[in-house]
Length: 321
Ligand code: ADP
Ligand code: MG
Image 1 (cartoon, rainbow, N blue to C red):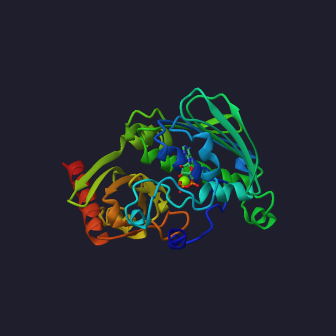
Image 2 (cartoon, rainbow, N blue to C red; image 1 turned 45 degrees about the vertical axis):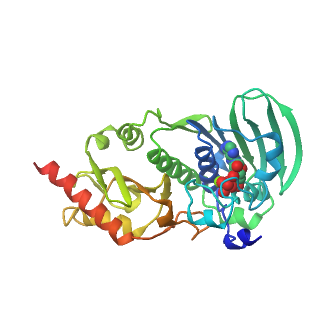
Image 3 (spheres, rainbow, N blue to C red; image 1 turned 90 degrees about the vertical axis):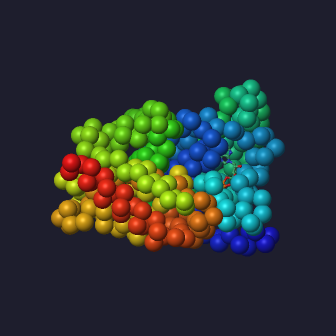
């Protein structure tokens, strides 16, 4: 109880892209090396995420769909030491509350269980067969919350948001093979061979990938690795900057500004294309700020900013030589 009270209750599911993000992050937490996302009609009709991760035991399925049920923290101290992407135990419960959800999951690739939830209630559970891993299918999102439906943008925009989040997660996990298909058409497929440049080529194009410079830096608290575009390859918005903290895509204005600072005045008011993966001691990260976990609070943010700026400056200097 104490623990649940410490976790700020919040709205996790705003749109189809939020479902995709939560399900893919769960798959990553489950150590999947292959993840396939399929959406029908921009996710408004159906979203499915299939992984080859650990699976869920039949007698743990109910628990997984309970609010504040998470296998990822044991007590309140863990709240300050969060290494996995999920920790609130809110996503599956929230999704099952506003959609029809079906799960097919196996921990061993031999026995499996299939269950369905709707409006927060379990409809059935039965034995099944399946490969090891989990497939979660979400249909009719917001069928019981018309106000939410009204708040959504056009199907085209909702699909763009799905593509955007999958792209960014892919960039943060070059070691995972990620596939995104929309109405049967494959929009992204990454090989999962750990090659970040190849993922950049897949997502932003080969020409862009060729003009990316490696950035690296570390201090006792942080390790940085990433790719940033040469100063003459720019975009007119910040949207092409992806910052990942311990594998999680985050939005942090200070850190992206630190990245821009590394360019000095070379950008002419424009923005680079960049992927920056930051590994930090989980003790320095407070992800418990916003329900969708995109905004995080960081200790030693100034130190990290300096580390980022100097890494970018150095990468550009190497280019000049
Ligand atoms: P959280 O990720 O914050 O723990 P979720 O509601 O997203 O909460 O998931 C609840 C629990 O269900 C997880 O803690 C995990 O034990 C289990 N789970 C969810 N998705 C998967 C998956 N794809 N593979 C294995 N276990 C999963
Ligand atoms: Mg989760």
